[in-house]
Length: 333
Image (tube, rainbow, N blue to C red; front, top):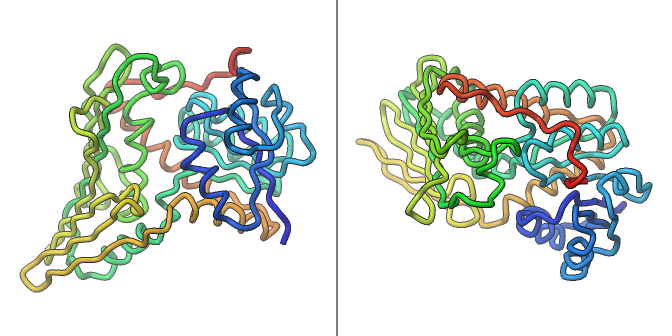
């Protein structure tokens, strides 16, 4: 089996759970190199995580002929910039969510990728876990009856300060960091929404909380997210039908205890999610798509659709969509 050699652009906190740990448990994948804006940090990080090669710039990873693909865990405003640079360098890309700063940039990535023969994928790990497909199957099976409403929420305690998620210029905001999860879940399970209204609670130019009301062919849907929470985590998903109600625990991290609870006059049952990591499913899908040897832009199409909803939520709340940081500042290279 050929080994997929991945280079990492940045020593981000998410790397360990999203890529390094699953890579150790996934055959045919090797984390071959890393670069960070601080070379000393990159060297220390590589030593701790047994990454064999350290490059001093992101460009150097893109120019390395021994690297097949790159993982982009940078601030959201830089996702599109470096994904475009990777495509130009002929590298496959696994890019963290949100895929880009806005939908227009996502379309620019799609245009650049079309005809490249590359696999470009948004790292929306939850969508690759069988639990998400199971939720979709329940909704489409008719067990809940006619679907009347759906609600998805994600709140987490992210105190304001030096965290990049509170920096609008770097693509921060509750919708960009947390809201993309319920938006994508509703798209995956229920269907394509239209944004009816949205209300933002702001801290300066950042949406610290956002509540959006959507319509999906007559189905009322609600997305709620927030970075200013006194609770450790508040996340869930609920679908109400004419026959039964489905409540879902840990929908965005099924391996941590994903559960389905269905209650109605004629039904009462429970299901548990597979404990295998959604990040492993994602990495396997990325590896397999590349091994197939054909261009695969399905992930880009999904990302464009999600960013369309994100942008519409911002506009409905009276805020503007985020803007890409182009070109990247020297400090980020």
